[in-house]
Length: 314
Picture (spheres, rainbow, N blue to C red):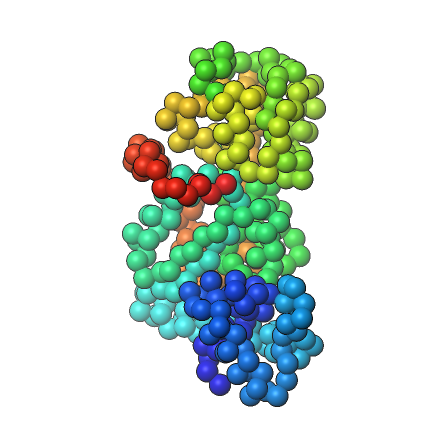
């Protein structure tokens, strides 16, 4: 039985999809399907129930998946130990991050990491918070970056940074020229909000209520990019982590006004699965995140002025 075939089966089981597994491994769906069929023929058992959507493991498939995951983890730890003797940092690192982590900031970290560790294959997906948590629990990602992270049960957490919240307004808004204002000046302002089921929205609602500052919510979106676009065309103001609007403030499409009398910050944390040891490459990426890196905004601005025909990730 080929070790690579076991890896592919585990990818299908984790993704609960042949197509997603094939995409993650840069292979054709038909090839991945053939590999799993071959494993089932060798074992004389059906491992995956293909009649369900998403796919489900059969009882033998669940037992086989759990055992194979342990074998793969043990093998990777052995590889890491051997490579560590030669001070090599190689292998894949899979990261799942919330949309609002700050694409410009994260891109700067990714570029620095690839410069320092060129032999590491690093892959990042920007997802809804619940999907980030799901990927960590299902061993589909090594590290997750989320806001208001809490550790508990099988999830561990490393604090990363506290991002200051600011009032974000269009460059044409009357408040755009203000450096700071009392928080009560935004009472009853038209407000562009993040969706009510997001942790950051719940915290913003709690902050505003505690400060006795009611606002008039005119739009709700499930990602920061759409919030920024609505504010840019003056549909309202918003409260966002300041790093998430670095590019727009540099380009002059948005302005940030600091709020007096309050200290509102969004904590970001790095989550991981406790019982799954971090690889050396993943540990090095965590170490890198602890170092301050200033993104090159002007270079990013030049890149974004070129039309690509593809929407920017939310």
